[in-house]
Length: 213
Image 1: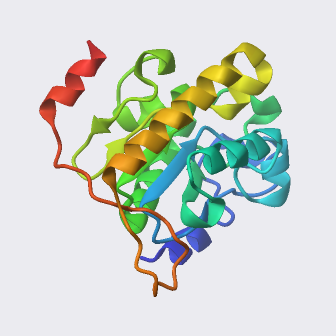
Image 2: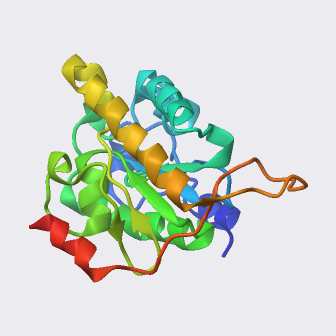
């Protein structure tokens, strides 16, 4: 199955109750299908539900600025959410909704094959780390999984709701840039792809998992 075929198979998904709770459309994901860096958020909000793309509202504008500060742009990365449909009133996803949608997120990751997955906020971080851990404890740290590295970050929406978190979020993206700079290889000048970093990341280091405490 290709990424396009997976998106088509979810076009009018009815697998969970969100299909009947006011969602306008499935928000599958957007970006470079060959990206070495993927960002995963929580769920679509109002603007994302209307446009059919993740991170197009105020949080999306902030994310664009943060990406730029890390030397990245939208056409270099792939962005998706754990949940593909907007929960009513932007409430938190419920466990059954996460369990229903998670396999499709994992399929996206398998098809894109990123080296680095940046999780935005608690839900994405806990879903991919498969641990109930707070984002403030693990943010801006690298966790080496079997096939990729997870780099948790605060969700941009959190900084919009709590202005005191903005400086922290900017500092975390600075740490992301430092991580990318350490592990990036130059992109060939003749490459037709957007100048996304080619990452050379060391094999999994079991000691990294001790960061959970």
